[in-house]
Image (cartoon, rainbow, N blue to C red; front, side, top):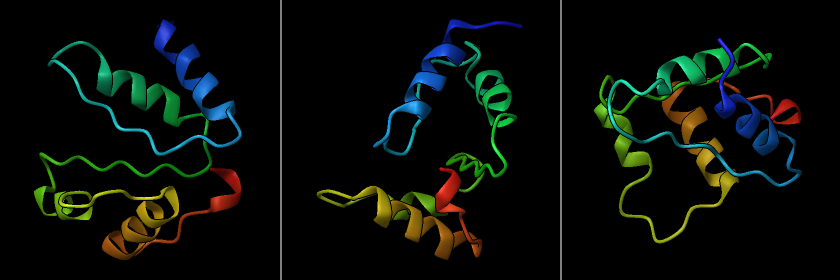
Length: 88
């Protein structure tokens, strides 16, 4: 199914200095579907669901500012994975 959201996400991805992407919004509007479709365009995809893993909220709360490098490093440590920064 085509969505305008996919085009916006592709535009975000193609921006040279894009920041991490956070999806928030009302229930049942297609967020999960959109992310699932968009994730197929990447070699690596990391999904963080704060409802399924509320302990991961600590990675982002009570911070005055986080750089994208800090966010990636924190995610790698928490999930015990290595994120391929060349293909982000």
